[in-house]
Length: 473
Image (cartoon, rainbow, N blue to C red; front, side, top):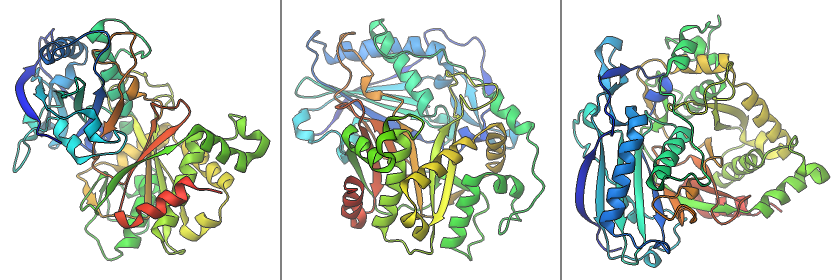
């Protein structure tokens, strides 16, 4: 790919500024991973309007100003609050976000298959200079880069702090921003945001800690809470299994590993026909019944089996499947769909590798359903309590399979600057996440019922995983 040249960099502020700054308390879910998460949207040359790079940039800048007036925390900064034990909170100070304009002579055709991660995509996003002993309070929580290509197409690279948004909240924000570029809602509805985190803070304050102890973590200040939450208890068991003499890890951060194995990010297309075939093999004539299983559940069970088999893990080793569950509709009373913070927790299933190999798909799906159904007020409040304190980074854990479901967030339908009745992007590519081994399930832009699975794998296991995952006869 030819070089990418930056031609403009501006700070963007809410069109309507907050009259006074304030500190917004974050939950422990928000504090887990305060790094920027990036998406790159690719758009073909418009058949409706011949936009110049300047007009695209100025239009997006103006609509972002409007959107920030509603999503004002995105224009703030993270802050180590001395009144809250130096924990990260959100300083709503109208600090602004960063937008960058760029161009390249490269054509889309030179990038190859856009569904496959390419390191050159990293040049299509703006990355604040955070090297060395940087002050986190200086880092913008939202950045964007508009890059015009030699073919007339363009990309929009967006980075948002994971402390600010989870995936659902990020999709809601981006959908609102896109709708304001042309003023017409086409397919993507967006919800009025709810910024305050009181619900999660209240859950934590009112939690009743169970009165029993946990093996090997009795020194942890929240040992009882850890025992209550399967996801974190299983995580400790995996750490002890990997490094039984390692007493350094007191409170692991679920999303921030200490060292990364060499991973290749690959996307696997799991077609609707493949999903139906897998369901039919498991449930026969009942495979069309929604009560049997969802596409997410059957593909997750299959991926766990395929990844564990591809890694060649010993049969006696404990293996664990963890998957993100949106708590918005699971709390009582329910949380607003416009909740703009982090509302996902991990549910967990654990077996030995040998047990997983011998387990039927039906039994694994049943365990996934049971783990999902355990996510209620008590689970969430105890989960948040178990995350209390400064976290230690995770060691590499091959026995851990993590799945994040984006299939209800059709990012590829987000329509930036095209005609309001045009299709969305050619493709949306997430860049390298903090934990590349996580499997992301995304809606396929080519087929409604299909799932595109993005996962990071060690190169030596890539072919084996591809074989076991795409072939299940």
